[in-house]
Structure formats: structure tokens, C-alpha cells
Amino acid sequence: MTNFGVDFVALERDQKTKQCLHHQRIMESHIAAYAKEIVRSLAMQYVPTDVFDKSKNQVLRERTPAELEEVVNRGIWIAERTYQCMAAKGWLAEVPGLQDLLEADDNVVGFGS
Image (cartoon, one colour):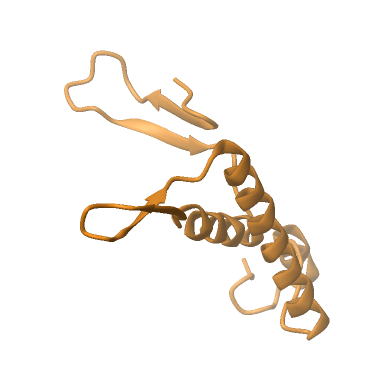
């Protein structure tokens, strides 16, 4: 069974306890996770209107789909710009791939056989 990029496979048929393998096929990067948090924060903000209720409180409305599209684009832009600035300051470091680390030196602590 697949649920938006996640596979669930039963370990045994007719099993008494439900056990399955969970394999996530879509992974997000750090910048994608950060962008998602920004979008979530911006999207939760309601828009003020010129209408007031009986208690003289300003009525708020939810964002329209077009406004939400703008929020998504803005959140992605903020995340991209943040990572660009961090890279320019030298605050990000690229780590070699696992295969490169394993092949580099067998005597390195933690990677020996």
C-alpha cells in the first residue's frame, strides 16, 4: 500500500499482530523542512477586514487560495535566501558522501572493519 510516497508492506500474511515495513520514498532536505515551517507560520495568520462584530472586535478572514499561493512562494523564497546568506557567511559545511567516507581510509575511527 502506498500513501503519498510511503510504502507499507505487511511482513506476513494473516498475521495475528499487525506488523509492517515502513519505507519513506520522498525525503525533504533541511531547507525544505525550514521552508515548510515558514509557510506553516505565514499561512496560519488571518487577514483583518474592515468589519467589526457586536463586541467591536475586528473580524478576521482566512486567506484565499491565491493568497496562500503567495504565502508558499514567499516561504520558499525566505528559506532559499536564508540558506544563501548562511552559505555566504561560511555557516554551512558540505559533508562528503558516506561511500567517500568509507573508502577514504579504513583506519579512521568508526569506519574500520
